[in-house]
Image (cartoon, rainbow, N blue to C red; front, side, top):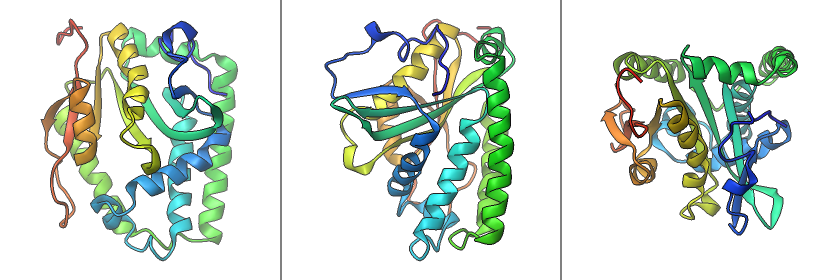
Length: 258
């Protein structure tokens, strides 16, 4: 199970969790990753971004699932990434959503987060990273990804790099929400807000901002919990209907010098 610092406001402090809630959160484990990938596949299915990057997903769905699984694993083994899942309180084996947050920057709190995870975990994550790199390279060589348009994926990654330059150079010290995914079967029940609570409480304590890229549907949730729009994406796929964008959350009392 992933290590959570003793300073965690939500996951390691039982008193901070409403145990009567229908859903609870915990650190993600390696065993959760397959269902996390399935949830991502279902949540992004039919979106303009998904159709642009993986236009043949309807013919090769398992290849899309594999791609999500590889991306989730790559983040999972990064030292400064916090991976959490939401599950049914009545049945902890039923994972309904997940989020992956990354602590960026070289400020004291960011450095301490990495340090608190411990030497043994650092070594373990490094070994896992090497193993997954070999595993993914081998599987993609033997069973090439037929769902993805790699030229479009590279182009989309370039757009993301431009967004980083445009919006995030002013905020090097921050928490960044790489993924917040709720199974379509469980959306609209406050689970996304529950996942975000963890990172917002950490960011408030550390006096740093939280950044993310929001879909049109996600924008509604993020505005409700205090996010503001920084600006539009550098570029969108041709058939994108608009909405969403680059969003930021400021902790109470935050200033540029925080």
